[in-house]
Structures are given as C-alpha cells and as structure tokens.
Image (cartoon, rainbow, N blue to C red; front, side):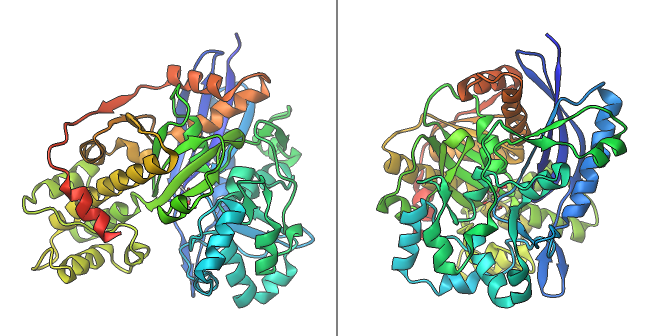
Length: 489
Ligand code: LFR
C-alpha cells in the first residue's frame, strides 16, 4: 500500500494549524506542521478576521509540508461557523469578514417576536441565536448598505479559503447550517428565512457534497509551491464541529459528544433533525453534520472564558502561566463552590473577564472581598461541568436515550480538571479523544477521494485505530450543585 499524504487546513477562533495526515490504508498518523494564534482585530467600531493572513500562513505551511513528503495527495479546509464575506460581481471580497462577536446583528434578532423566532426554528431546525449569520447579514444590510447592495455572492469562512485555493465558489452544507438561512430539514437554502430578511437567495452558490472535489490548486499556487502535479481540494465537512464529530470513534448510533474549544458544543449525532417544542425549550439546535447527519447540540460558551482569564492573569503576573498553574490556582480555593451561568451575555465579550465574573459573584452574594483569581477560575471550571451535565440531561429527555458515555473532542479535551469535573457532575464515563479531532475528521473524510465506497462507519473505524483514548469515571455522591446551576439558566 502506498501512503497518502492528506492535508488539513484547520482554522479555529483561538488558533489555526496545518496538519499532515499519513494514511497507510489502515490508520492515520498526524503531525501538526505549523500553528499560529488567531484573534479578531478591532478597527474603529468593528471586530474583523484577517483571512489573507491566514491564507498566507497556509501556503507557507504547505511549503513546509513539501520539505517532509514527496507529494501532497489532497487538501481539505475546515473552520469555525457563522462568519462570512460578501463578494462583488467581479469576485472581489467587499470587506474582511466581521466576527460574530460584533453586536451589529443583535437588533434584528431583538426585533423578532417569540412566534417569529419559533417559526424560524420550525422552518430550519435551527435555534435563533445572536451569532447566526442571518442576523449579521441583516445588520450589514442596515448599517453598511453599500456593501450589501454590491454583494453578489456569499462565502462562509471555509468557502473563502477553498475559493482562494481553487478559484471555485461553492457553499459547504454543514457550515451553511450555522447561518440559519439553510434548513437542516430540507437540506437546502430556506426561502422563508431569506424572504423574511430580504436576503437574495442568489447570494448562495452551488451547495457541495462531502467527499467531492471542489477543484485543483490554482496553477499560480502550484508554481509558488514549485510542483507540477494537480492537488485536489476536497469538500470536507468544513464546519469544525462537523469534522470533529466525524473523528469520534463510536461504533454506536446516536452517541453523545462535547466538542470543546473556544466554544463547547454539547450534543448527539442523529439521522434526522428533531423539530419539536422540547428542543426549543432546551435551547438545542439541529446543525448539519457530515454526510447529511444531524448534530443536535447546544452551542455553549467553552474555553473562551478561561482563555480570557489566563490572558488577564498572564498580564498581571507578566509571564505565560501554564494551564497546570492556572488549574492549581483554582485548587487553592476551598470554600463553597461559586457558580455562574457561563452563557450569560455578560461573559460573551466583556472588557475584563476576571472583573466581570468577580462582580457577578459579589452581586449574587456568592463572594465578597477583592478580586480573587482562585474563586474566579474555580467558578468557571465548575460551571462548565455543571452546564455539560444540565445539557446532557435535557438532550437525553429530548431524544429519549440515556447515554453511558460522553466523548470529548478538540483542544479542550486535554483539560483534565474539567474532564474530571464533567465525569463527576454527569455520572457518565468521559472519553477524551484527540486534541486534533477536527483535523482528523477533515483528513479521514478526504479518504473518500481515494476509496469511493468508504462509509462514515469505516471512517470511524480508521479513527479508532489511529488515536489513544483516555477515560474518566467518578462516583457521584452529592450532585445538588447541578440543580443549583440549573436554576441560574
Ligand atoms: C466552534 C464553532 C461553533 C460555532 C462557533 C462560532 O468552533 O464553529 O460550532 O457556533 O464556533 O462560529
């Protein structure tokens, strides 16, 4: 068997990376070739992403890959959800993509009545959420009418990178489902939602099929890389959550997962969306996963809060503290566990996270005194685990299945304190998978280009052979803390 060298370009909110996967016909070994931190740039009133910089990094990293292997066999792109850029008729990007942490779209969401929000859910299977692209688009329409009027095509973040690589404009379906302009029920653009917000459906391109080739690397990029053969760019599930879920080595249907990164996506994989009142009431949403599967999940704040705290604490202590040190600080606190609703809007993008949490704890009489980092970090860790337990409980009710185990994937799966607390609060077996699950999922889907008959189950079988799992299991004694958390949300 010859080895296939498969590349994942994986771009998260906190960092982006290029991963080389070597597939030998049986399993995949992965190597992170290069990684850089990502972040929004604030210019005047808005937060933007710098896609050109990310693209440049990708090309440089491909050069690094070519120092290690003779040939690159294929490439796939995945990134975070909801953000996009608009292109004019001449295919020029009209503005750098805005970040979903802008508030520009909030007004059009706040203007909706509960009935209107419910209708949008019943049309699309997607819960109305302030970050969904439909609201950002309405905001652009109102606040940046020139841009909106010139817009001819809309590309989501991974679609932009695919376009930069191949010159082909296509929309990938799992990423599209984060817009709420696409229905997970009909698996097509929702005319109802487009019409409601005056968004022309013509903005969308052809919707791609997972495993198909989008196009080959542009000749100019081939020249720059110094190669004389075609490299196909494959359409993988390019929403990072969808790719990460592919890399869950469960042999069961409808398994539960937490995809842990900047965000925590707490959910289960299903064959069909559940479009019912209970889903709405539990704040769950039916996103599209790989190969038309559904990932029913809650989109919760994740490591973002603790990452912000670490940054603030690093600034005060004027050093780069390790995660272990951060965890040890929390351990120093021995009093009653303080809790915050991690999804409270206050913690979405505050000026100073530590102060915001501290103030909240003081206001809710859970703490008095000066800002105490032990208390703050402890509150976040415990509240995350409680949020997971609370959400898994509603998920079990909604889909009528009790889970024995929960798979954790993504960068956050290496936080053993949160993993252990999650085991304690849920009473389930927690199985931590790969830190690079998104890339692994991206890579394993590309195998379809070489082995047309491969199924999703076969892909998971390959993943299972390729990674080591770590299990956490803890006896629950008193779990009233989860009830205390449930009262906050
Ligand atoms: C995770 C993720 C979530 C999405 C959020 C914002 O990285 O893609 O699924 O809701 O980022 O885009």
